[in-house]
Length: 362
Picture 1 (cartoon, one colour):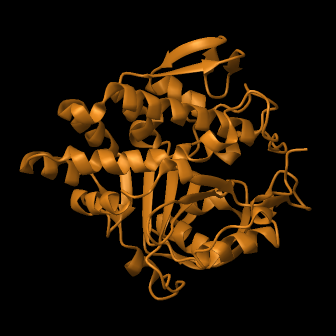
Picture 2 (cartoon, one colour):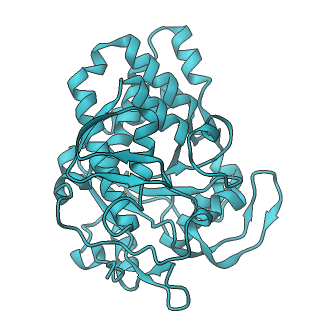
C-alpha cells in the first residue's frame, strides 16, 4: 500500500539495508503473511446464522481466472502445495477517494506477495515483488474484454491499471513459471476499516515522523493510530530513514506486528459482534478468485492452513538489481531470481543465495 509511481519524484527508490532500530528480522518476516491468515480466519468465524452468511457472502467480489486466462498457464504443482497471489490495491475511486491516497486515475497493485504454502501446510513463504520491477507483460484480455498486446519493460505495478487483476496473475505466472492457485486483493478502504473496527492500533517510534506526502505527523513515543493515521503510517516513505521503499516496508512490518498483538489482546474471536463488524468491513473490500469467493470456500481454505506455524513463516523480496538504463527502476536479478522460483516450483528449501538482492540501497 503505497504511493502510485506517477506521484513520486523521479529519484532512485533505493532500499536501505536492514539494521538500526527496525524490528528484528525474524519477527518481521512473517508479519504480513500472518495478516492474510487473520483475514481468512476472521471471515471463517464471522458467518453465524444464514442472514449473517448471506450478508458477508454477498460482499465478496470474484475473478474467474480460468475463464480469463484459459490454458496458457503453468501446470499445477504435482504436490498438494498451494500458491496464492496477494495484492494491495491503491485505487483512488469509491471509498478510497477520501483517504489521502493521491489523485491518480485508476489503480495499481503497489503491494504484491506470492505466498507459497508447501505440501503438508506446516510452513509458508511470502515473496514480495517490488512495485518498480520492470517486467514483460504478456498478451492479456483486459477487464472490459479488449486485447492488450505483449509489452516489455513495463512497471509491475502498472499492469493492474492497464489490464486488471487477471493480467497481474498471468504476468506473475510468466515471470515465475508457477501457477497461482488463488488470488486475493484488498484495497485502502478495507485496511482503514479494519483498524477502525478494532478501535485503533498502538505503535511506538523512536524518532518523530513528518511526511507531507502521506500526511503523517507523529512525535517520538507511543501513539494509538486510527484507520486514517494507520494508512499514512504504512504508506509513508519521505519521513523515515533515507526515504527508501525499504524504510516504508519496515514501518509496514512494524505496524502489522502491532495490529496482530492488538487483535490477540482484545480477544476479538470471543466477541461475535466485533468479529462480524470486522468481517463485514473486510469482505466489502475483498476480491478473490472465483473459487474462493464465498465464506464457505474461505473457511475451507483457512482450515487447510491450521497446521501452519507463524513462527516458521518467512518473507523474501524477489532479488532485484538496479536497471542499467533507468536507475529508478529494478529488474529481476539472475541467477538469484531463477533459483528462487525454481525452489518454489519444486517445493524445496530456498537456498540462501536466492534470498540476496544486488539492489541493496547503497
